[in-house]
Image 1: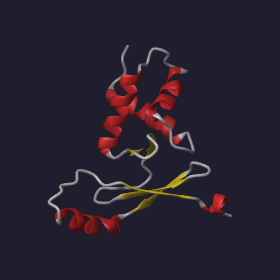
Image 2: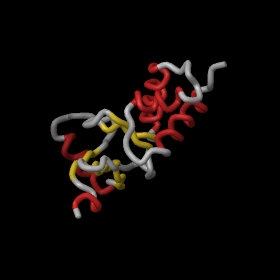
Image 3: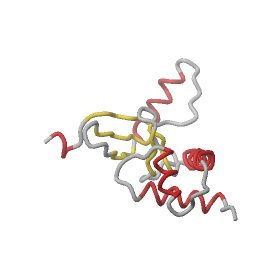
Image 4: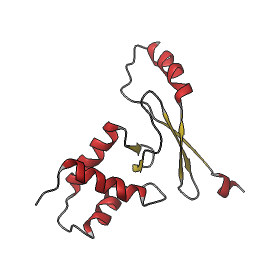
Length: 128
């Protein structure tokens, strides 16, 4: 029996929340296949697409991986600090950036659909 979309989304979010580091779609798929061997890649990709559209998960474009959303971004910009050494991701509220980004893109008549800022560097543990 097929699962409903909301149940599938909950499954994927549970997997993402259970991992300290970003996960690729195939890593998520492998984890889900432990309990559900017949799950296919398109199911995971569709679910991840829905979760990112809803703002419940973020796709890290630079490393092609996903993390669960840990902040409230109704009118905000998620700022994701990605450690190049250990792979951890810290999420910050970039509300202060939204107006500046809007002004910046308006000057070229660009119409953004979503905002995500990725910053690469080292976390406090790895920088020490």
